Length: 130
Image (cartoon, rainbow, N blue to C red; front, side, top):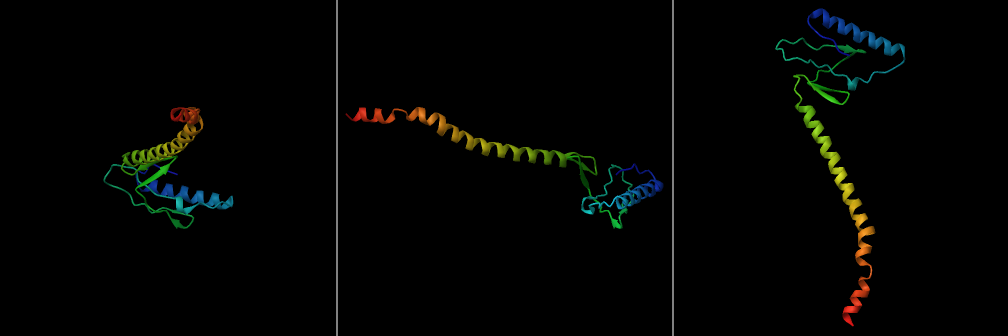
């Protein structure tokens, strides 16, 4: 849930929306995972409002970034965390592929190329000794 905060009234409106969400979840017998809630201010402005929001009688902790649909959004609107996260995931995937391919190539060589090279090798070895 998000809202553009321009003044104190917007803060109150966001808290009212959070209260409604809590009531809705309670009415539907749903539990909101409080460990996944974060309050983040996305701005480059120097003046910031305090983040004292409450959902289901628990204060929402303040954070400097959050992940939304797999994208890391930083409070200062800089993409360094997202770029580092993406590069790290790509390296892990590449390492996995290289490990799998190394095993597959070794098995393919042993089963396809090795027999061709070894075929008749024992005969050639005996001919040389006669």
